[in-house]
Length: 365
Image (cartoon, rainbow, N blue to C red; front, side):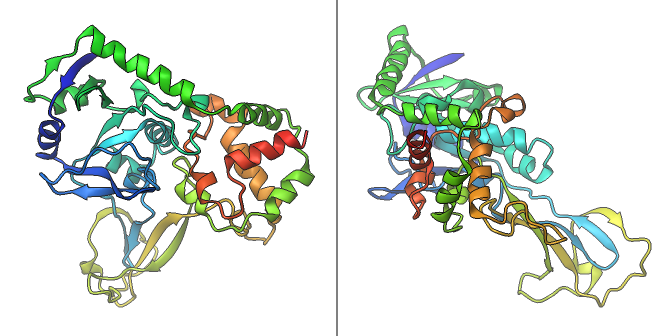
């Protein structure tokens, strides 16, 4: 991998934003950071603060139409975003994107957005609140397989730039860069090592995961934890690896919000003709919409027969944590479904985020 010394971050930002929409984390206030579309050249300082929401929604839209039926034709509604760059994605969130890449590998809607993205990661040099990325192989340094380019802060406002992929190499063509010295490259590993040593002791998480995989968590404990779940979906919304969704038929509306009644007004790629039905251009067109769902909702697993295998809240929280930390999913994803960001702990009003639950599991032994 090629590594360079970056003396002007703005020059790199200017270069990458010429052919791409530019997104970066912005700090609105202490403890309040979020992703924002940046209009060059007004780049905010590159933030080390963890954004409240991960970059999940850039690829897995919170709500989007999958296809439209106009009474005669089914038309696919694939997104066609402009090329964009996510500048300064932290290691835990990049690991989550890599995880989602596998989960949505065959999903054309996700992949249509993913192909347009350039990912510029940033190493964390200090632990964040509630974070334990080092424990689940998700940080604090950016993993090579998760980013196109990696930035690491050096002294005197300089940055080390690591070129990981061919796309990253192509993206910086034309930027005046100085090859990094061995000392500057070594400084990265020294700072990451120091950062790992700064984390608090999270050994209870390791012990809790081991107990969960040995089937040593009692149903009584899951029921007690379930009582504290308010089904607000805060954890599943902010979790960068959660991917539950539902679909729903809705009227297809035009730009002015009026239902579309004529087939000719519906655009999109033809995927199937309903040959068994006569064209009905007076019937309002409908669209099938995908939206984020939550496995912690009471109705998520309810079947058409009204049988519900997770009617009890205890069953739902048990299923949630099993999906995050069960060894059963390692062959498919090569890792646990948790990247150690700690957002679930920060957002949960019932105090049953990852730290609280794992401590309860250990204390219940």
